[in-house]
Length: 509
Image (cartoon, rainbow, N blue to C red; front, top):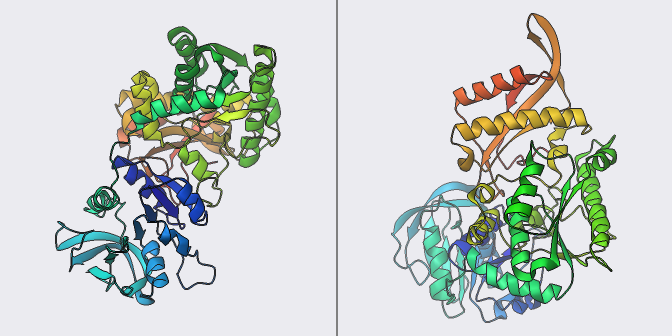
Protein backbone atom coordinates (compact mmCIF):
# COMPACT_ATOMS: atom_id res chain seq x y z
CA UNK A 1 0.00 0.00 0.00
CA UNK A 2 1.35 3.42 -0.93
CA UNK A 3 0.44 6.35 1.32
CA UNK A 4 0.99 9.76 -0.25
CA UNK A 5 1.89 12.39 2.31
CA UNK A 6 0.20 15.77 1.86
CA UNK A 7 1.77 17.16 5.03
CA UNK A 8 -0.66 15.82 7.61
CA UNK A 9 0.44 15.36 11.21
CA UNK A 10 -0.90 11.80 11.15
CA UNK A 11 0.60 10.66 7.83
CA UNK A 12 3.18 8.38 9.43
CA UNK A 13 0.48 6.96 11.65
CA UNK A 14 -1.56 5.94 8.59
CA UNK A 15 1.40 3.94 7.31
CA UNK A 16 1.81 2.29 10.71
CA UNK A 17 -1.87 1.36 10.98
CA UNK A 18 -1.76 -0.26 7.55
CA UNK A 19 1.19 -2.37 8.66
CA UNK A 20 -0.67 -3.33 11.82
CA UNK A 21 -3.35 -4.73 9.52
CA UNK A 22 -0.73 -7.10 8.07
CA UNK A 23 -0.11 -5.13 4.88
CA UNK A 24 3.23 -3.49 4.10
CA UNK A 25 2.96 0.25 3.45
CA UNK A 26 5.33 2.87 2.17
CA UNK A 27 4.99 6.59 2.82
CA UNK A 28 5.95 8.79 -0.13
CA UNK A 29 5.84 12.57 -0.72
CA UNK A 30 2.72 13.65 -2.60
CA UNK A 31 4.72 14.96 -5.56
CA UNK A 32 6.55 11.73 -6.51
CA UNK A 33 4.32 11.21 -9.55
CA UNK A 34 2.12 8.41 -10.82
CA UNK A 35 4.99 6.60 -12.55
CA UNK A 36 6.90 6.28 -9.25
CA UNK A 37 3.80 4.97 -7.49
CA UNK A 38 3.10 2.49 -10.31
CA UNK A 39 6.69 1.23 -10.17
CA UNK A 40 5.97 -0.16 -6.69
CA UNK A 41 2.94 -2.10 -8.00
CA UNK A 42 0.75 -1.31 -4.98
CA UNK A 43 -2.65 -2.89 -4.40
CA UNK A 44 -4.07 0.49 -3.44
CA UNK A 45 -3.34 4.14 -2.74
CA UNK A 46 -4.13 6.30 0.29
CA UNK A 47 -4.04 10.10 0.15
CA UNK A 48 -3.26 11.58 3.56
CA UNK A 49 -4.57 14.66 5.31
CA UNK A 50 -2.75 17.96 5.28
CA UNK A 51 -2.86 21.50 6.71
CA UNK A 52 -3.55 23.35 3.43
CA UNK A 53 -6.81 24.50 1.91
CA UNK A 54 -7.53 22.93 -1.48
CA UNK A 55 -8.24 26.46 -2.76
CA UNK A 56 -4.89 27.96 -1.76
CA UNK A 57 -2.58 28.80 -4.69
CA UNK A 58 0.33 26.92 -3.15
CA UNK A 59 -1.70 23.95 -1.92
CA UNK A 60 -0.48 20.45 -2.86
CA UNK A 61 -2.28 19.25 -5.97
CA UNK A 62 -3.62 15.86 -7.03
CA UNK A 63 -2.04 14.36 -10.11
CA UNK A 64 -4.96 13.05 -12.17
CA UNK A 65 -2.89 10.12 -13.47
CA UNK A 66 -2.93 8.66 -9.96
CA UNK A 67 -6.63 7.93 -10.45
CA UNK A 68 -5.89 6.06 -13.69
CA UNK A 69 -3.58 3.41 -12.24
CA UNK A 70 -6.38 0.86 -11.96
CA UNK A 71 -6.12 0.53 -8.18
CA UNK A 72 -8.53 1.63 -5.40
CA UNK A 73 -7.90 5.06 -3.87
CA UNK A 74 -8.83 6.23 -0.36
CA UNK A 75 -8.67 9.94 0.47
CA UNK A 76 -8.46 10.93 4.15
CA UNK A 77 -9.38 14.49 5.23
CA UNK A 78 -7.44 16.76 2.80
CA UNK A 79 -7.09 13.71 0.53
CA UNK A 80 -10.88 13.40 0.32
CA UNK A 81 -11.24 17.10 -0.42
CA UNK A 82 -8.67 16.84 -3.23
CA UNK A 83 -10.58 13.95 -4.78
CA UNK A 84 -13.90 15.77 -4.44
CA UNK A 85 -12.66 18.96 -6.06
CA UNK A 86 -10.79 17.17 -8.84
CA UNK A 87 -13.84 15.07 -9.75
CA UNK A 88 -16.44 17.83 -9.72
CA UNK A 89 -17.84 17.86 -6.20
CA UNK A 90 -18.26 20.91 -3.95
CA UNK A 91 -15.72 21.84 -1.28
CA UNK A 92 -16.15 25.07 0.65
CA UNK A 93 -14.54 26.84 3.55
CA UNK A 94 -16.89 26.41 6.51
CA UNK A 95 -17.73 29.21 8.91
CA UNK A 96 -16.75 26.95 11.79
CA UNK A 97 -13.92 24.43 11.73
CA UNK A 98 -14.29 20.90 13.03
CA UNK A 99 -11.41 19.88 15.27
CA UNK A 100 -11.30 17.02 17.73
CA UNK A 101 -14.03 14.55 18.63
CA UNK A 102 -17.16 14.68 16.50
CA UNK A 103 -20.38 12.71 16.05
CA UNK A 104 -20.62 10.67 12.84
CA UNK A 105 -23.96 9.55 11.40
CA UNK A 106 -23.88 6.78 8.78
CA UNK A 107 -26.75 7.46 6.39
CA UNK A 108 -25.83 4.94 3.68
CA UNK A 109 -23.19 2.35 4.68
CA UNK A 110 -22.20 1.52 1.10
CA UNK A 111 -19.17 -0.71 0.73
CA UNK A 112 -16.70 1.20 2.91
CA UNK A 113 -18.80 1.58 6.07
CA UNK A 114 -20.84 -1.62 5.88
CA UNK A 115 -21.47 -3.25 9.24
CA UNK A 116 -20.63 -0.19 11.31
CA UNK A 117 -23.04 1.49 13.78
CA UNK A 118 -25.26 4.25 12.44
CA UNK A 119 -24.04 6.57 15.21
CA UNK A 120 -20.38 6.68 16.26
CA UNK A 121 -17.64 9.09 17.29
CA UNK A 122 -14.72 10.08 15.11
CA UNK A 123 -11.76 12.48 15.13
CA UNK A 124 -11.88 15.50 12.84
CA UNK A 125 -9.25 18.10 11.97
CA UNK A 126 -10.36 20.40 9.14
CA UNK A 127 -11.83 23.75 8.20
CA UNK A 128 -12.80 23.22 4.55
CA UNK A 129 -15.83 20.96 4.15
CA UNK A 130 -17.33 18.77 1.42
CA UNK A 131 -20.89 19.96 0.77
CA UNK A 132 -21.76 17.69 -2.14
CA UNK A 133 -20.01 14.62 -3.63
CA UNK A 134 -18.81 14.42 -7.25
CA UNK A 135 -21.22 13.05 -9.89
CA UNK A 136 -21.55 9.28 -9.61
CA UNK A 137 -20.54 9.25 -5.94
CA UNK A 138 -22.67 8.29 -2.95
CA UNK A 139 -22.58 10.34 0.23
CA UNK A 140 -22.23 7.79 3.03
CA UNK A 141 -22.13 9.80 6.24
CA UNK A 142 -22.38 13.23 7.82
CA UNK A 143 -20.98 14.69 11.00
CA UNK A 144 -21.58 17.58 13.35
CA UNK A 145 -20.15 20.14 10.91
CA UNK A 146 -19.68 18.14 7.69
CA UNK A 147 -22.65 17.51 5.35
CA UNK A 148 -20.53 14.87 3.58
CA UNK A 149 -18.12 13.12 5.94
CA UNK A 150 -17.64 9.98 3.80
CA UNK A 151 -18.28 9.14 0.15
CA UNK A 152 -17.56 6.45 -2.42
CA UNK A 153 -17.85 5.40 -6.04
CA UNK A 154 -17.54 1.63 -6.13
CA UNK A 155 -17.48 1.69 -9.94
CA UNK A 156 -14.47 4.04 -10.02
CA UNK A 157 -12.81 2.47 -6.99
CA UNK A 158 -12.52 5.83 -5.22
CA UNK A 159 -13.38 6.35 -1.56
CA UNK A 160 -13.11 9.28 0.84
CA UNK A 161 -13.51 9.97 4.54
CA UNK A 162 -13.28 13.38 6.18
CA UNK A 163 -12.32 12.00 9.60
CA UNK A 164 -9.09 10.30 10.68
CA UNK A 165 -9.40 6.49 10.96
CA UNK A 166 -5.76 6.13 12.01
CA UNK A 167 -6.13 7.75 15.47
CA UNK A 168 -7.44 5.92 18.53
CA UNK A 169 -10.14 8.56 18.98
CA UNK A 170 -11.95 7.05 15.98
CA UNK A 171 -13.09 3.74 17.54
CA UNK A 172 -14.00 2.05 14.24
CA UNK A 173 -11.11 3.51 12.27
CA UNK A 174 -9.05 0.33 12.13
CA UNK A 175 -12.10 -1.61 10.89
CA UNK A 176 -12.54 0.90 8.07
CA UNK A 177 -8.88 0.64 7.08
CA UNK A 178 -9.07 -3.17 7.23
CA UNK A 179 -12.14 -3.19 4.99
CA UNK A 180 -10.40 -0.96 2.46
CA UNK A 181 -7.24 -3.07 2.48
CA UNK A 182 -8.78 -6.52 2.50
CA UNK A 183 -12.17 -6.34 0.81
CA UNK A 184 -11.69 -3.40 -1.54
CA UNK A 185 -7.99 -3.69 -2.46
CA UNK A 186 -7.76 -7.46 -2.10
CA UNK A 187 -4.60 -7.32 0.02
CA UNK A 188 -3.34 -10.51 1.61
CA UNK A 189 -2.76 -9.61 5.25
CA UNK A 190 0.40 -11.69 5.60
CA UNK A 191 3.06 -9.07 6.24
CA UNK A 192 4.76 -8.91 9.62
CA UNK A 193 8.02 -7.57 10.94
CA UNK A 194 9.24 -11.17 11.18
CA UNK A 195 8.55 -11.68 7.48
CA UNK A 196 11.12 -8.98 6.78
CA UNK A 197 13.97 -11.31 7.73
CA UNK A 198 14.05 -13.66 4.72
CA UNK A 199 13.40 -10.76 2.35
CA UNK A 200 16.26 -8.75 3.81
CA UNK A 201 18.66 -11.70 3.82
CA UNK A 202 18.16 -12.04 0.06
CA UNK A 203 18.56 -8.30 -0.51
CA UNK A 204 21.72 -8.12 1.60
CA UNK A 205 23.33 -11.03 -0.28
CA UNK A 206 22.34 -9.52 -3.64
CA UNK A 207 23.74 -6.11 -2.72
CA UNK A 208 26.96 -7.27 -1.08
CA UNK A 209 27.93 -10.32 -3.13
CA UNK A 210 31.33 -11.46 -1.88
CA UNK A 211 32.37 -7.97 -0.70
CA UNK A 212 33.69 -7.10 2.73
CA UNK A 213 31.30 -5.29 5.05
CA UNK A 214 31.69 -3.35 8.26
CA UNK A 215 28.88 -2.48 10.64
CA UNK A 216 28.49 0.60 12.78
CA UNK A 217 27.69 -1.15 16.06
CA UNK A 218 26.55 0.92 19.01
CA UNK A 219 24.90 -1.80 21.08
CA UNK A 220 21.44 -0.29 20.70
CA UNK A 221 18.60 -2.40 19.35
CA UNK A 222 18.78 -0.82 15.87
CA UNK A 223 22.45 -1.47 15.15
CA UNK A 224 22.33 -4.81 17.00
CA UNK A 225 19.46 -6.12 14.88
CA UNK A 226 21.09 -4.77 11.71
CA UNK A 227 24.35 -6.50 12.64
CA UNK A 228 22.70 -9.85 13.35
CA UNK A 229 20.71 -9.70 10.11
CA UNK A 230 23.79 -9.02 8.03
CA UNK A 231 25.85 -11.62 9.90
CA UNK A 232 23.09 -14.18 9.29
CA UNK A 233 23.18 -13.28 5.59
CA UNK A 234 26.94 -13.21 4.90
CA UNK A 235 28.73 -14.59 7.97
CA UNK A 236 32.36 -13.58 8.42
CA UNK A 237 32.30 -11.21 5.45
CA UNK A 238 31.01 -8.85 8.14
CA UNK A 239 33.20 -7.17 10.74
CA UNK A 240 31.46 -5.06 13.36
CA UNK A 241 33.24 -1.90 14.41
CA UNK A 242 32.35 -0.57 17.82
CA UNK A 243 33.58 2.97 18.28
CA UNK A 244 33.78 4.04 21.90
CA UNK A 245 33.55 7.78 21.35
CA UNK A 246 33.42 8.62 25.03
CA UNK A 247 29.82 9.76 24.62
CA UNK A 248 28.09 6.61 25.86
CA UNK A 249 26.32 5.89 29.12
CA UNK A 250 28.05 4.31 32.09
CA UNK A 251 29.70 0.92 31.38
CA UNK A 252 27.94 0.56 28.02
CA UNK A 253 31.11 0.01 26.04
CA UNK A 254 32.10 -3.06 28.06
CA UNK A 255 28.58 -4.50 27.76
CA UNK A 256 28.56 -4.18 23.96
CA UNK A 257 31.96 -5.82 23.54
CA UNK A 258 31.08 -8.71 25.85
CA UNK A 259 27.73 -9.39 24.16
CA UNK A 260 28.85 -9.42 20.52
CA UNK A 261 32.41 -10.72 20.73
CA UNK A 262 31.84 -13.35 23.42
CA UNK A 263 28.16 -14.31 23.11
CA UNK A 264 27.30 -13.96 19.41
CA UNK A 265 30.83 -14.66 18.11
CA UNK A 266 30.46 -11.85 15.60
CA UNK A 267 33.85 -10.52 14.36
CA UNK A 268 34.29 -7.30 16.31
CA UNK A 269 36.86 -4.51 16.36
CA UNK A 270 36.65 -2.16 19.35
CA UNK A 271 38.13 1.31 18.80
CA UNK A 272 38.92 3.65 21.68
CA UNK A 273 38.31 7.03 20.05
CA UNK A 274 37.30 9.18 23.03
CA UNK A 275 40.14 11.69 22.70
CA UNK A 276 39.54 12.00 18.99
CA UNK A 277 35.83 12.82 19.33
CA UNK A 278 36.32 15.21 22.23
CA UNK A 279 38.87 17.06 20.12
CA UNK A 280 36.34 17.39 17.28
CA UNK A 281 33.73 18.70 19.72
CA UNK A 282 36.02 21.26 21.37
CA UNK A 283 34.35 24.66 21.22
CA UNK A 284 31.26 23.29 19.40
CA UNK A 285 27.95 24.32 20.96
CA UNK A 286 25.45 24.27 18.08
CA UNK A 287 23.46 20.98 18.10
CA UNK A 288 23.48 20.47 14.33
CA UNK A 289 27.21 21.17 14.23
CA UNK A 290 27.69 18.55 16.97
CA UNK A 291 25.67 15.96 15.05
CA UNK A 292 27.49 16.55 11.79
CA UNK A 293 30.93 16.57 13.42
CA UNK A 294 30.20 13.28 15.19
CA UNK A 295 28.69 11.72 12.05
CA UNK A 296 31.71 12.68 9.96
CA UNK A 297 34.19 11.48 12.56
CA UNK A 298 32.37 8.13 12.74
CA UNK A 299 32.84 7.71 9.00
CA UNK A 300 36.51 8.66 9.17
CA UNK A 301 37.06 6.01 11.85
CA UNK A 302 35.23 3.39 9.79
CA UNK A 303 37.30 4.24 6.72
CA UNK A 304 40.51 3.76 8.68
CA UNK A 305 39.34 0.47 10.23
CA UNK A 306 38.10 -0.74 6.85
CA UNK A 307 41.51 -0.24 5.31
CA UNK A 308 42.99 -2.53 7.96
CA UNK A 309 40.62 -5.44 7.32
CA UNK A 310 41.97 -6.78 4.06
CA UNK A 311 43.54 -5.69 0.82
CA UNK A 312 41.18 -3.19 -0.71
CA UNK A 313 39.24 -2.78 2.56
CA UNK A 314 35.47 -2.92 2.98
CA UNK A 315 33.15 -1.47 0.37
CA UNK A 316 29.97 -1.60 2.45
CA UNK A 317 28.86 0.02 5.69
CA UNK A 318 25.89 -1.36 7.67
CA UNK A 319 23.82 1.13 9.64
CA UNK A 320 20.73 0.70 11.82
CA UNK A 321 18.84 3.54 10.13
CA UNK A 322 15.08 3.47 10.88
CA UNK A 323 12.11 4.88 9.01
CA UNK A 324 11.57 7.54 11.69
CA UNK A 325 15.22 8.68 11.23
CA UNK A 326 14.60 9.10 7.50
CA UNK A 327 11.33 10.98 8.02
CA UNK A 328 12.71 13.41 10.64
CA UNK A 329 15.78 14.11 8.52
CA UNK A 330 13.53 15.26 5.68
CA UNK A 331 14.25 12.21 3.53
CA UNK A 332 11.01 10.33 3.79
CA UNK A 333 8.15 12.61 2.95
CA UNK A 334 9.58 15.78 1.50
CA UNK A 335 8.86 17.35 4.89
CA UNK A 336 11.02 19.86 6.70
CA UNK A 337 14.14 18.61 8.43
CA UNK A 338 13.39 18.41 12.15
CA UNK A 339 16.99 17.46 12.91
CA UNK A 340 19.69 15.62 11.01
CA UNK A 341 20.12 12.12 12.36
CA UNK A 342 23.83 11.38 12.17
CA UNK A 343 23.24 8.32 10.00
CA UNK A 344 20.97 10.16 7.54
CA UNK A 345 21.64 13.89 7.40
CA UNK A 346 25.03 13.90 9.10
CA UNK A 347 26.99 11.80 6.61
CA UNK A 348 29.85 13.50 4.75
CA UNK A 349 29.44 14.10 1.02
CA UNK A 350 32.67 12.24 0.25
CA UNK A 351 31.46 9.00 1.82
CA UNK A 352 33.55 6.10 0.52
CA UNK A 353 31.13 3.35 1.50
CA UNK A 354 28.00 1.97 -0.08
CA UNK A 355 25.38 1.86 2.69
CA UNK A 356 23.56 -1.32 3.73
CA UNK A 357 20.47 -0.34 5.72
CA UNK A 358 18.25 -3.40 6.28
CA UNK A 359 15.95 -1.61 8.77
CA UNK A 360 15.41 1.59 6.80
CA UNK A 361 11.73 0.80 6.13
CA UNK A 362 10.87 -0.20 9.71
CA UNK A 363 9.62 1.62 12.79
CA UNK A 364 11.21 0.94 16.18
CA UNK A 365 8.60 -1.54 17.44
CA UNK A 366 8.94 -3.49 14.19
CA UNK A 367 12.71 -3.63 14.65
CA UNK A 368 12.17 -5.05 18.13
CA UNK A 369 9.93 -7.75 16.65
CA UNK A 370 12.68 -8.65 14.16
CA UNK A 371 15.22 -8.74 17.00
CA UNK A 372 13.06 -11.11 19.03
CA UNK A 373 12.65 -13.32 15.97
CA UNK A 374 16.45 -13.42 15.58
CA UNK A 375 16.87 -14.49 19.19
CA UNK A 376 18.27 -11.21 20.51
CA UNK A 377 18.09 -11.23 24.36
CA UNK A 378 15.21 -9.32 25.89
CA UNK A 379 17.65 -6.93 27.58
CA UNK A 380 18.89 -5.75 24.17
CA UNK A 381 15.54 -5.96 22.39
CA UNK A 382 13.94 -3.59 24.90
CA UNK A 383 16.90 -1.27 25.43
CA UNK A 384 15.56 2.26 25.26
CA UNK A 385 16.59 4.31 22.20
CA UNK A 386 19.89 6.14 22.49
CA UNK A 387 20.99 8.74 19.93
CA UNK A 388 23.97 8.02 17.72
CA UNK A 389 25.72 11.25 18.77
CA UNK A 390 25.34 10.02 22.35
CA UNK A 391 25.55 12.25 25.39
CA UNK A 392 27.09 15.10 23.36
CA UNK A 393 23.64 16.29 22.33
CA UNK A 394 22.35 15.97 25.89
CA UNK A 395 24.87 18.56 27.03
CA UNK A 396 22.67 21.41 25.88
CA UNK A 397 23.74 24.90 24.92
CA UNK A 398 27.39 24.31 25.63
CA UNK A 399 30.50 22.34 24.79
CA UNK A 400 30.51 18.60 25.54
CA UNK A 401 33.58 18.52 27.76
CA UNK A 402 34.82 15.41 29.56
CA UNK A 403 33.78 16.87 32.95
CA UNK A 404 30.25 17.67 31.80
CA UNK A 405 29.90 14.26 30.14
CA UNK A 406 31.00 12.52 33.35
CA UNK A 407 28.46 14.52 35.36
CA UNK A 408 25.71 13.63 32.89
CA UNK A 409 26.79 9.96 32.86
CA UNK A 410 26.52 9.76 36.65
CA UNK A 411 23.10 11.41 36.67
CA UNK A 412 21.80 9.13 33.92
CA UNK A 413 23.05 6.03 35.78
CA UNK A 414 21.05 7.05 38.86
CA UNK A 415 17.94 7.70 36.76
CA UNK A 416 18.15 4.33 34.99
CA UNK A 417 18.79 2.50 38.25
CA UNK A 418 15.72 4.00 39.92
CA UNK A 419 13.49 3.57 36.86
CA UNK A 420 14.39 -0.13 36.70
CA UNK A 421 13.88 -0.60 40.45
CA UNK A 422 10.41 0.90 40.11
CA UNK A 423 9.59 -1.58 37.32
CA UNK A 424 8.89 1.20 34.83
CA UNK A 425 11.68 0.68 32.29
CA UNK A 426 9.57 -1.28 29.77
CA UNK A 427 6.65 1.15 30.12
CA UNK A 428 8.73 4.11 28.98
CA UNK A 429 9.82 4.79 25.43
CA UNK A 430 12.78 6.76 26.71
CA UNK A 431 14.09 8.08 29.99
CA UNK A 432 17.27 10.13 30.22
CA UNK A 433 18.94 13.21 31.65
CA UNK A 434 19.80 16.51 30.02
CA UNK A 435 22.57 18.80 31.26
CA UNK A 436 22.00 22.43 30.19
CA UNK A 437 24.97 24.78 30.26
CA UNK A 438 23.39 26.55 33.22
CA UNK A 439 24.48 26.84 36.85
CA UNK A 440 22.25 27.79 39.74
CA UNK A 441 22.76 28.82 43.34
CA UNK A 442 22.02 26.28 46.04
CA UNK A 443 22.68 25.62 49.72
CA UNK A 444 24.33 22.44 50.98
CA UNK A 445 25.81 22.02 54.43
CA UNK A 446 25.04 25.68 55.22
CA UNK A 447 27.29 26.71 52.35
CA UNK A 448 26.51 28.37 49.04
CA UNK A 449 26.85 26.12 46.00
CA UNK A 450 26.90 26.99 42.33
CA UNK A 451 26.12 23.80 40.47
CA UNK A 452 24.55 22.31 37.39
CA UNK A 453 20.86 21.71 36.73
CA UNK A 454 19.92 18.18 35.66
CA UNK A 455 16.73 17.79 33.64
CA UNK A 456 14.82 14.51 33.81
CA UNK A 457 13.13 13.58 30.52
CA UNK A 458 10.81 10.55 30.38
CA UNK A 459 8.25 9.90 27.64
CA UNK A 460 5.79 7.28 26.47
CA UNK A 461 5.36 6.62 22.74
CA UNK A 462 4.64 3.94 20.13
CA UNK A 463 7.05 5.04 17.42
CA UNK A 464 8.79 8.30 18.42
CA UNK A 465 6.81 10.28 15.86
CA UNK A 466 4.61 11.53 18.71
CA UNK A 467 5.25 11.22 22.45
CA UNK A 468 3.68 12.17 25.76
CA UNK A 469 5.59 13.05 28.92
CA UNK A 470 5.50 10.21 31.43
CA UNK A 471 3.66 10.75 34.72
CA UNK A 472 6.34 9.35 37.01
CA UNK A 473 5.31 8.89 40.66
CA UNK A 474 6.26 11.79 42.93
CA UNK A 475 8.01 9.47 45.39
CA UNK A 476 10.18 8.14 42.57
CA UNK A 477 11.06 11.64 41.38
CA UNK A 478 11.95 12.64 44.92
CA UNK A 479 14.24 9.62 45.29
CA UNK A 480 15.96 10.31 41.95
CA UNK A 481 16.50 14.00 42.73
CA UNK A 482 17.77 13.25 46.23
CA UNK A 483 20.33 10.74 44.97
CA UNK A 484 21.58 13.02 42.19
CA UNK A 485 22.10 15.99 44.49
CA UNK A 486 23.68 13.91 47.25
CA UNK A 487 25.88 11.68 45.08
CA UNK A 488 27.01 14.12 42.37
CA UNK A 489 28.95 17.05 43.79
CA UNK A 490 28.51 19.14 40.59
CA UNK A 491 24.67 19.01 40.71
CA UNK A 492 22.49 21.10 43.02
CA UNK A 493 19.14 21.20 41.23
CA UNK A 494 16.91 18.66 39.42
CA UNK A 495 13.92 19.57 37.24
CA UNK A 496 11.34 17.63 35.19
CA UNK A 497 10.49 18.22 31.51
CA UNK A 498 6.72 17.92 30.94
CA UNK A 499 6.66 18.77 27.22
CA UNK A 500 5.02 16.37 24.76
CA UNK A 501 5.95 15.83 21.11
CA UNK A 502 4.75 17.85 19.33
CA UNK A 503 5.38 20.70 20.08
CA UNK A 504 8.74 19.59 21.50
CA UNK A 505 11.00 16.80 20.31
CA UNK A 506 11.99 13.91 22.56
CA UNK A 507 15.67 14.89 22.65
CA UNK A 508 16.43 18.51 23.48
CA UNK A 509 18.90 18.86 20.61
